[in-house]
Structures are given as C-alpha cells and as structure tokens.
Length: 221
Image 1: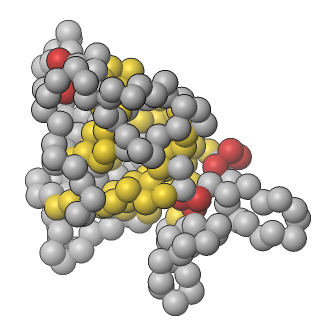
Image 2 (image 1 turned 90 degrees about the vertical axis):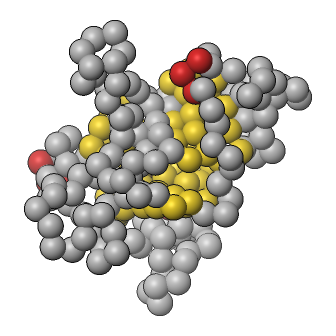
C-alpha cells in the first residue's frame, strides 16, 4: 500500500474462527499497524433489538424505509411513527463485549445496533477504507444510511472502501451485530462455549503485558 491510500479502520475482537464476507468487501488492507491512525474507540450509541424490528418487517423482509434503524431517520412531525432514536439510546463501550457492560445483557443473544458519528477531511489523492479486525458473529455495516455489506465470522478481518461515500462532516456509521447461535456456526446450538457479543481487537502487546487489548476505529495513512 502507498501513502496515497488512507483507511478508516475499525477493529474488534471475538471468539470464533471462521469468516465469510459479502461481495462488497474490498481486498484486505495490509500493514495497518504501520499507518497513522485516529481511533473512534469509546462510547457508541446502542439499541438492543431482540426481534430485529430495525432490520425486518412483519413479513421478515428487509426494511428499506425510514423505519430501518440504519437510516438514523429523524421524524419531521409527530405523525411520523418512527420508534427508534440513537440520540436518546443508551451507550456501550467499544472495544468490549456487551455481556459484561450491562447486567441485563449477560446472557443476551441477538442483534444490537451501534452508531457513531465522525467527520473526515477529504483529499482528492487518497482512497478511504473501513477496516474491521473482527466482530462477533454476523456484522452488517452501514454508512450514512446506505448498506456497505455484511461479514460472517468473529475472528477474521474485513474491509469496505468508502472513498465515494464519505462526507466532510456528519458521517454516521452504524453496525448491526448479531451473536445468535446457529447449527452451522461456531459455536453451534448446543455448546459449552460462552457466547459473547464482541467488539474488540485481538489481544496483543501494546506496551503492557502480552494480554493487553488494543483499540478500535481509526483512520490511517
């Protein structure tokens, strides 16, 4: 990679080993640690969605209208019955699992939506990517109300190019992360594996012990 390529990177850590990405996923960015980075770790707005009402309609078909949580839509009048609001939702820390951040989520399996806003100064000479280290288990990624793609597998990195999608200000990045067990997933339905819902880097040495954790979302040059 040359310095003409920039990447906006988000890193997570999880506990599973296989991964599969959607067709929109870009070739994996190399040598992330050698690039200058700006982290988006910290508190993210989060909405717990056990029935996937933010993704599916009553026929279990994908939502495409303003009721889809990834639209981050703000109603223009009281007659618009939009029943979600990231601005008034609770928060979860990234990196981290949701199970230990709230007592009510200790055994939770299902979808949680995360949202974070950021600004970016565009350069005509640079390309921009989202890089994810890992995310458990199924991750759907959206930028500014548009789907970028999905990735399956909690221990494999993946990228999306967003050069033509990013704005100079008021970008909003939304992820739907689902850790529901399945017969063909790891872990499967019957397991003694604790099924965390994770956002984290894989453990690595960051100036402390070898078990320290690095952190999350950043741009790099």
